[in-house]
Image (cartoon, helix red, strand yellow):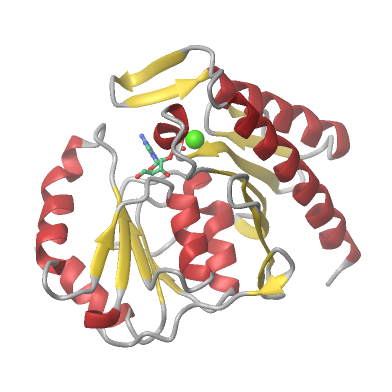
Length: 262
Ligand code: 2AM
Ligand code: CA
């Protein structure tokens, strides 16, 4: 691994742990919960506080880089092609009710491609990380996608946002279409952890529509480095696209066939 990548990785590890634990401490003391686009789309003071700390620490150490955060947008257009993409708390709806399934997601994207990704789940004390071309790790141990090749043995995960009414019909149609064909479908509520769970083989596949770069920048790199196949649905996959399907190479066609049946 190049020493510049190691520097970024070490920095992102420390930062993700620090703010993940900060978020955990704020459970039970969230401050205000604000509505964004509707009563189902919320942000807490804790999300804003975490994003502020993350942005401030990144800009202190990597002054020339741009930072894109879910809650406060992009700081500037950098001239060096480097953008940090941050979700201060992925799984805010869980977080806001004290459901212990959320994470901090930090990625460094260089010229549009994720180069370093770190995700920290403070309740499980699980730190996921990947540097492009160097594999994926959880708490320092290599992780790999599952070897499940039959739909009937697969546990899949999906997610959806109530704010995205245009996807309502397809979300429900997919859910029904998988019924009886897979072992289970779960909706855990954190797109980033869903990708990490594909990476470590806890689940066998994940798909979602209407995502944003901070939902996929770190998670998709971690999954890819763990051996996942990642595609878009009806589009090429890009962290700037809207859709993702993450699974292993044996399941991808079988899952896609059902997801595509409209
Ligand atoms: P969040 O908790 O950071 O908001 C739920 O299906 C997943 O979708 C979560 O990862 C959630 O991230 C994300 N999400 C929720 N609302 C969203 C929106 N309006 N746009 C993009 N992603 C969203
Ligand atoms: Ca968030």
